[in-house]
Length: 69
Image (cartoon, rainbow, N blue to C red; front, side, top):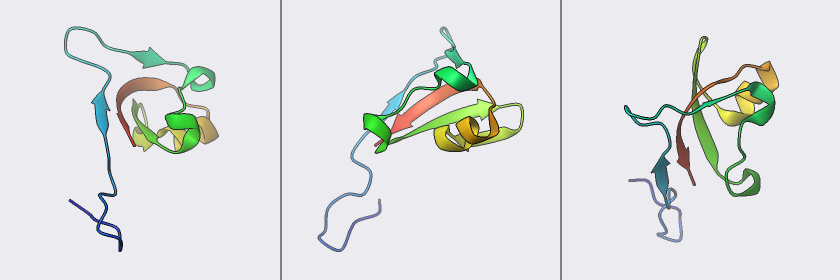
C-alpha cells in the first residue's frame, strides 16, 4: 500500500465493475468518469489495458474492469 507524506492512503477505494457473469462494455463516448475525474476507470481494450482518460483520448471503447479512487 502506498501512503502520502501525511500518512494517508493514496488509494481509498476500488470497485470491480465487470464480473464473469456480467460483463460491462462501454463505447468510447460513454466511458464513465469516476468521482468527477478524480478517480480512474481501468478499461480493457483491443489495444490492451488503459485508463479511462487514455481510452477517451484514443477514442477506443472496451470492457470496464474496475474503478479506483
